[in-house]
Length: 161
Image (cartoon, rainbow, N blue to C red; front, side, top):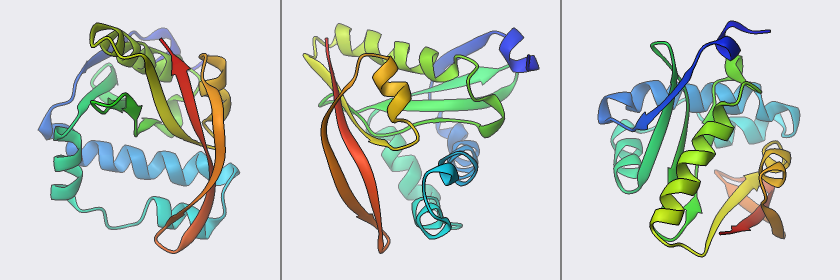
């Protein structure tokens, strides 16, 4: 049992000071976890070495974003766009399967309910698909998307509220 499992997960609103840490968390999560389901070239296109900090910060500020902490360490984040779309849900590679993604998704579902949204959607990676299915999302369509010249399979998924 990992130490993080025994520690309480604290969910809070995103702070602009979190940006650099979340970029690193995102990059590490994609490169270490999604690499099970995608090629090296796809992973590097998805999570490149250079991610523009200003662009990242503007994206985080344009939507509701929550972060998860265990102790003092940021271990995950999720966002919710005004239209009910979850664009990003990532958990640090050292903290997988400890309830962090579930806690983050719960924050989103509470916010979506408070906003009286009828559904929540996402475009899930192959890697995240089982998590979303286990939390009531259904596949609407399998699709091919292109990111920085690399083609990826992902899944449009939706959960009715």
